[in-house]
Image 1 (cartoon, rainbow, N blue to C red):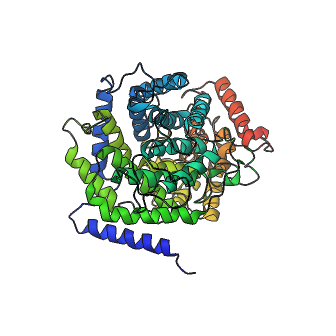
Image 2 (image 1 turned 30 degrees about the vertical axis):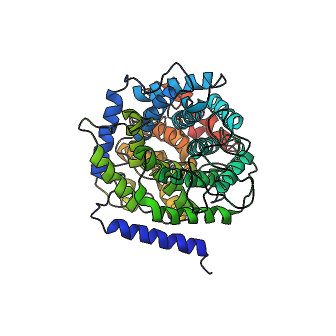
Image 3 (image 1 turned 90 degrees about the vertical axis):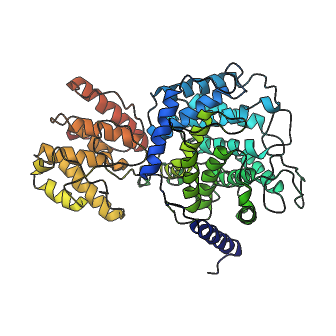
Length: 557
């Protein structure tokens, strides 16, 4: 098959860009590099130490931006530490909810208004914390974005109607998040935004802050084209395309949202009303042509820099992450643009941790939150999670599953067996005592081949249900709990009543992980018989929503 011209050109531009960066003495980093993790830790400490710091914008004016500052910090902290009870996250939730309650009020517009940004980061935070618990608020935010979209398809200051690229990119990110959280969004409105973005792109390939819309026909020369706005415009274009599934399917392709779920089980997905929603099918070629022209402009103008560097690096990370899936590029854990961004953040990091404010419209917590989202490759991970219905690294094994918090996206440990099959052989001998108290290897994964993986899971389920060794049942329950496979739920429900004190905890935490119901259905670490029975009944009821035909035999309870 012949290579399409625009794909070839983008590939060559990428090679040229990488070679230019590599000509400098720039270190190679990944989001898990010790240098990066140390900066992330410093940023988190800064947000926690400055919890009560005065916001740049007032909190008593819902559209001014103060609530958004709290929500952004809460979102960044949540993405890093996954702890909804942390005070930074809780403060962000309170501010997000305050905005939702007031969002129907009068917005004076003009540059005093930051309501689109506040609505966007509030959406990101609430969906990240609990898309079911905050369903009503997310629905209200979806209605908000419908209400404030301009007739031309853009977003901007109330009363303006021209539309600006910066606010439009955040609206698109929020709408994409709502769609991936299972809500039916205004897909025709998304298509209108995509068309507006292509109309206001400068003939040179860059994007302006405020677009001059020709309405139809050829594009016209735009004013005030910026590097940051070019990344923002292209990012919004790609995000909108993904919301319409122009780059491929999402978790609802099999009707379940869960990778590896048999089609017979994919009958119900809690909170996903948009599984069968119809989306406009825009032609892909014009969008990719716009991205091609954008790449050419960036290659020629990248030295211009950005007026808001922290805002810009998070935009770059977002653009590159969506470009990666749109062009079906192989993932590069250490791309040149990321290495350059890390070096920039290293040079600006303050001794106390965190990053200083930008030159305008910013404060140190804002800069720090944006830096953290860049360093963690948060958009790439959000795409992976939304596409698979799973946390990245969901096949890995934690050292201790009794604490269900997922630190970052890694599940780590170290030790006695080098391969899953070797470990299974050891466990199957009913001599698992040598494993107790030791860690499982951090690189131990269930086999990605579906047939081999299924065989491994079968062996683990047999161990949980029938092994005489409590050590073997413990390790098998841990492995099943981190398999991210819906098929193991009945076995884990069975394991809740295991006589060993640890196996039920591993089973409980595995059920929480697989279901993404991190609060589960109660059941303390040392439950009585009644509490176990109650938890098993509730988990059975939950599982039947996905697999109504499943019969739990007496042996299961």
